[in-house]
Image (cartoon, rainbow over the protein chains, first blue to last red):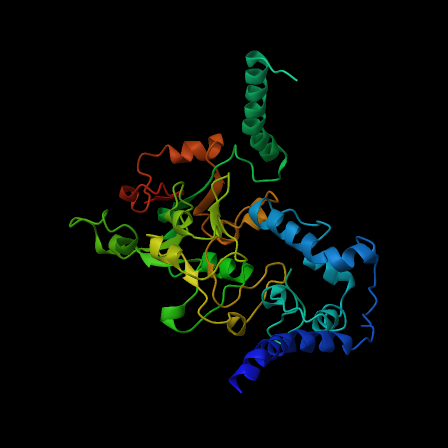
Length: 124
Length: 246
């Protein structure tokens, strides 16, 4: 009996270690493949969608560091306030995609979308 | 390939020169505040005391920067406010001083020290001195450790113990609010100064008691040449750039 368990033990260990890997592969395979429909913007974007989609966080962070740690220059291309001037409906644009991509961000804790009366309006 | 000692040394020297010069070239290209300027503020208390009970500077500042009115005195948020003279200048009070002056309400704010202790202790570089001398906060980098609160000898900093938004009755849409867990303070209104403006408190003062400007500017330099100019706790060597005239 101990001899057979000694032979089985590595295989059991392998299965146990593989479970989380297989689990995540399975979850990826059955992920919802519905396309996230985002609200259309009212104006023209500062960049093409295929660039803005992956790189908008990098652009925003770069502009943020320039603004906060350099000199404050209003009217820059990649600032949140400028995004919001066209993408007016945050819940239908930013929030929808961030929810689908499981991204949690804290930009809006301080910037945008706040009015003491109705919680709308905005700060840059 | 052979390399003579002369060629090797010349090459090494050229590389070193590039390494030393490159950062300075980059700084020249990078955007930043004007290092030739050094901003300072002068508060004329003789003009200020004429408007008894006036809080125009505080109101204007707190409105412009969405500073919340937290009722709990231990968690109050303050960028600029008034303190009695003897609390602001404890070493200047003497027995012969009249009581009215001892209790004179003096507007206080961040002193934008040339050798700011808050910037030295900040572990993340969230608070720093700009080349033009203004000490600013980058709340994106603030981790809420409050070392700066402990380091500031003037108590000019406030900590957001809770979400400030519920305590705002009015919001200036051109300025962000803050979040729980970050420190904030007077910024000499960098957002106005960078556009050529003056701080909100200076603009709002009905007695014209506040003067803001560049110390290299002859107009401000002549005001600063007054030998009776006071600075808060000069013995600490922080070199405050908020000056008071009694």
